[in-house]
Image 1 (tube, helix red, strand yellow):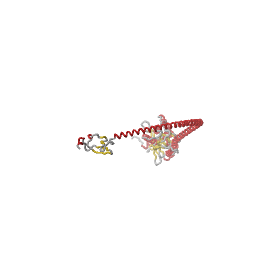
Image 2 (tube, helix red, strand yellow; image 1 turned 30 degrees about the vertical axis):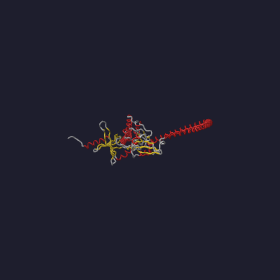
Image 3 (cartoon, helix red, strand yellow; image 1 turned 90 degrees about the vertical axis):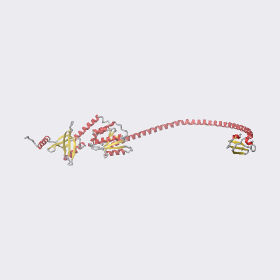
Image 4 (cartoon, helix red, strand yellow; image 1 turned 60 degrees about the vertical axis):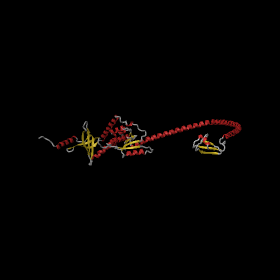
Length: 446
């Protein structure tokens, strides 16, 4: 029968070999792939090393930060880096290698080097910067035209952030009466979800702009926080979206000491939201002061020109004063002489005209009397002739002058029964109706 050993014997040999190979703690570099904490206070961290080619990982191991060391290790790491342990972070950990026949190999974490993590973060940051520089994105957003007096803003921040309230207070209560329009697009402003949330907010702004909304700029605000909370603003994808955004982006994420990649790709970057509000308001204050200065210079210039013109007019008036008085006196004398000559001429012509009118009146008077006497004689003769020719006046008693339609009737043959006749008598007129007409031969028998 072939010799063999039990599984326990085999794994005990492995445990002994591990203990012999790693009698003391060692420093190991790895990337945090997963973090789990339990009510017991222990923290389990899965460390990986990414593989090449098709392999996702070339190595993976479970590490444990025991409760009795966790508070001390995490506090030292945060103090040194300003960050908390999170997924995706590359760390240098001091571990004791352990092997259990039941649980397999694990690493017991005794310490984490904050300086290494800072170096890794900075290395990643520098690589991101170099990539953006090669792609021509560092200055892209800054080349967009910015209105000299921007008034309409899309705000990306969290509504509960302290920086948001400070910004709104400084912008709207500016003390000068300047008015602005803002619209909030909420997004997480720290942690691993921040880059994606901010990019989603930028997409929402662009959709509103396409729908007709008008903005002068986009403002990215965050009110202070730890250095670790601001690492999200070094994200490559977020930086690309800011650089390529079609509106100017103004960044104020509340950090005084460091400059992040988002600051570098934005059109304008200031330290705090309050400083950004002051920056916007100051643009209006400077413009107002400039306009006031222009108005003052214009008023001063106009006043000087008017004063100069007034002085020249006064000097001209004084020079012309004596000459004008003399000229007026001469003209007045000329007018008086002309008036006298006109009065004499009018009086003489009036006398001559009166004489002419008197002579003409005598002529008209005598001529009219003679004419009236001659005409009166002519009228008397005309009346006599008329009276002699008046048929009515020549009527004998018992005779009448017959008219039909105002015309004399010369013969009975001109009449028909029904004619209306006017009979002119010596002392009046009678109207009659013809009933019948009898010729001369019929009258002889009557």
